[in-house]
Length: 198
Image 1 (spheres, helix red, strand yellow):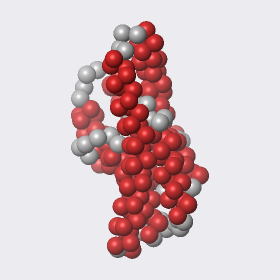
Image 2 (tube, rainbow, N blue to C red):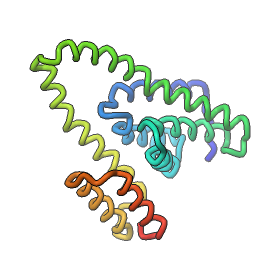
Image 3 (cartoon, rainbow, N blue to C red):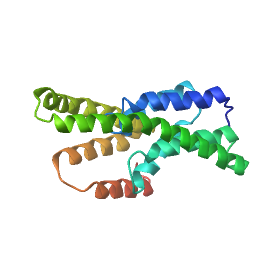
């Protein structure tokens, strides 16, 4: 995929991730629906496959959840260079995309988290602090559900994709009702995918 990006587009990428950083309650993955809207649907800097592939690769890799942001930025940069065949230009613009995306998603939330955590720890017995923590739980769950919906729907929503939807429901119930380790579920999904069943 090849795209053209002006300096103002790079600035827009940074500012969009800066704004999403303040909405990332529950982690950066909760803002994936808006990232998809912006990067894939609105700006068309990424294909749907690149978006979902970035999230899947980052989730499968060891390390923090936020790594998918770096992959999204990398893919935007590589696309701006004209693809991986562009050599050093792809690596350079990919690095710029990583830098801007990660700086944008990390700087505001890290600064705010540090300040609020210090204040919240000093005032942890206040009723308002306890109510805020309890009130945020449903919001985080809803944002995670929206992310899961977008990732599942990107593979098709028709009846011909019923095995994928069935797997999604089964895994959701298993996560909710059991203490089965997530790696077993990931391994099972990988096996079903390798066999071509989903």
